[in-house]
Image (cartoon, rainbow, N blue to C red; front, top):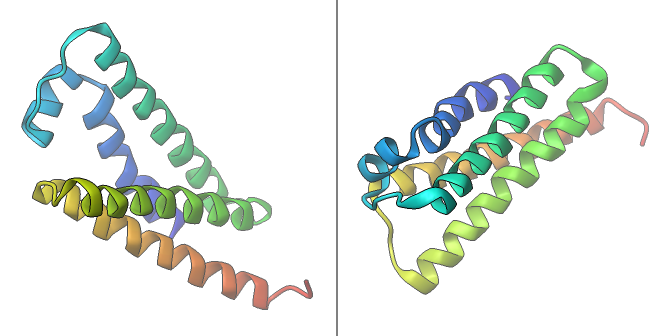
Length: 124
């Protein structure tokens, strides 16, 4: 689960921050204008990449797997809740963003199921 989430998140991170002036208009349908907007998308890329690196590291280190699953659950759940709130308030976004929502719900669910399995193998 951690490996799949990391591999899936890296291209999204790069699409947001590597060249936001070129990628965001294609993916999301609006222009990225100026330093402030570019800055925000590159910061999002950094946040996504940091999480992906943590999940990659934890995939091969058993002592990090439980904390990484919690981070994965919270990261994906937070994104999904924010998107659902936006749908309720703002309306339905484009297909790319709906796909992201479905993936976030799926990964949050997989992380929760994995956490229950990990907890089942421990006494606490």
